[in-house]
Image 1 (cartoon, rainbow, N blue to C red):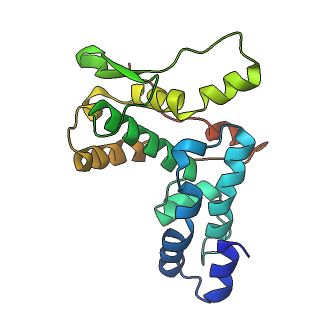
Image 2 (cartoon, rainbow, N blue to C red):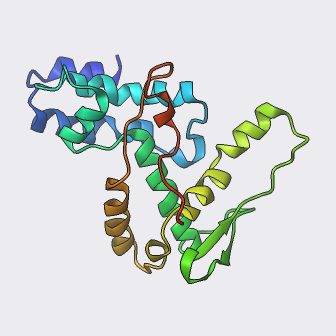
Length: 198
């Protein structure tokens, strides 16, 4: 029996307050455990993992007829993809400020006042098989620095985790969070939705 099946069978209430509390307490931590290591790369795997939250939120009272991204907004949730990207950014911040051990291949350089500190990642071997290159591009060593470099310089400069989380949360709240199913009209939203700074 899955965690979702157990929760739905053990608790009768489908009210938003009860369901969200159960989801955050008993379920969401499972697909997010060590997600920096195994975060999915392909659109199919991303969509399949997102289905955990998509299916559960559809059972919440008053949400059954809403589209998934509408439910997220209504319930004040983020997609699992959005949350994994946030974890990656926070860990790159830890690396930059030396709060975590160095990750081989990831370095930093000064990008000036406009771009702030820039993260660098291992160079890709263009002779490698396409499948291996695809996996490397989706790994934390490449994906994390890419997301970090898309942030405004002012966010990167915060020296405390609390101030970073508060400002990063406000920044991410302004970015559309509409993950779609593979093959749907929203499929392109499975990719990163952050705009590069001008």
